[in-house]
Image 1 (cartoon, helix red, strand yellow):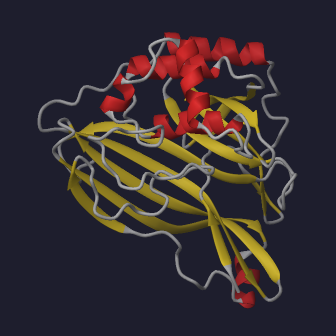
Image 2 (spheres, rainbow, N blue to C red):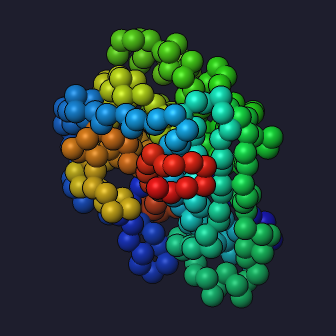
Length: 310
């Protein structure tokens, strides 16, 4: 019996029927690249104002992610999406102490098989899969970076969490944002340079890298706008859903298709704020086309202190 865990990035609107979680391809239609470019320009132009985090206060970034896990038992394979909750309290002064909490909620959505079938077959007995607990450290330099902390759709976590360091798309520190090109074409070149040419995901990996950064909740307003405009230049980008409902928030979903999955990024139509992401199987792998392989929602709020929610 074996198990593999795949960290997904994604969003909403899943249907559960016959044990299969499927994204309905026809919902919202498939917009042309011109439609996607226009919508992204609009999102950049109306970009949400950065929350003001005063001295002694914290920015709470809440990420609710459903990641795909697979296991075998009784001669067959099983797959399910499992809910993971991550809360990060970011101090106004990034050099102060951060707080990170992770929790595996125990909620599942079955993709292949059912809970009863998996239990009879002895699948998913190796444990819950992702570390849980609480970490505190100045600059977010946690002694042990939890597996999957910043992993989405193949994106790799940094070797060590350090939010006062050089940064990356997966860890967009202030200094990293300062070093980005200030023009759209320059950012497009930088984005392509940072993604390996042999990446099997193709240009969908570029969309995922932007989602990696935006999911942190720490990308500044002007940089978010630049990222939206850079995405508008990606060939093959489509509007795949004009009214994606993610965790009670409605946004517009942009997608790029790779060999095995389509990466999607969802932004609020009114504010341009990033609200979530999803990945959807193309049917070229082991899962049927339209199968949701992960979805994530992100919320931010200014709170009184570490551990507080208001």
